[in-house]
Image (cartoon, rainbow, N blue to C red; front, side, top):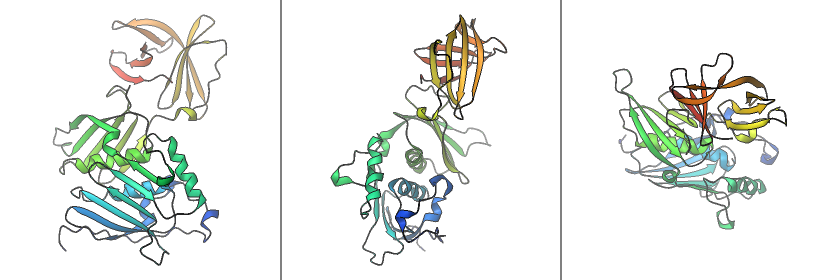
Length: 331
């Protein structure tokens, strides 16, 4: 077979579902391998990919994004133009297209075009609040449109230098706002497609505008021969319980961290730090003010090896040697 043809052969294990689609809830996305949701017929050209993808039932826009991201991650990175038509497995008329994806070097567009279910209107409206997708009008219901290139900027590129890691490459990427996992996947796939072919292990570290490079990132995407995953380390603010701090305490500041939220406050003339974890549990330590390595900040009264410094609202964490370990933004 000619090298300029791309063929994917997948034996789909169809998920069991009721004939009444509206009465059956889709399984949690995280528990489903996207490869189980579709099968592909390929008719690609030299510089383009044209696929007809059969899905076993109607999926909402979020699930379609994941399926599309999964397919894109496996395509030949030399293909410039990608067109995908999604059809239902039980749709006899092959001209009936349920959804379409169009992608070139700068534009990613996914839309559901053949779904009269009222639930699709609800699914579409949920995306209005997502700053990464165009607002949905009457003419673009069910449409998700993202200019991938406009969502990020590469700040730094690190290549492995030794014989042991010269197959790796890391990209430090700045994003303007907190993005959902599916959008981060699209960005990571796009960056992977542009990475040198001799670097099969690609890591993408995402940083928010006020995050310091090397001092804790928002999310990390791995694109390797064995791992294709994105993990967000910063929990959503509304997912963290409120602290049980005395209402008469004077709050010095609060910062969102990987585990939850940290508060520094004054109570009855003493200083305290309370960590509130995402599961609702708390941990409190008494603080004192001290100066180390010409920096004035806070440390634990007991076992105070780390120094916490507040500057411009951010919380900087230094180790006992004076090296910066992490920076956290105000909650």
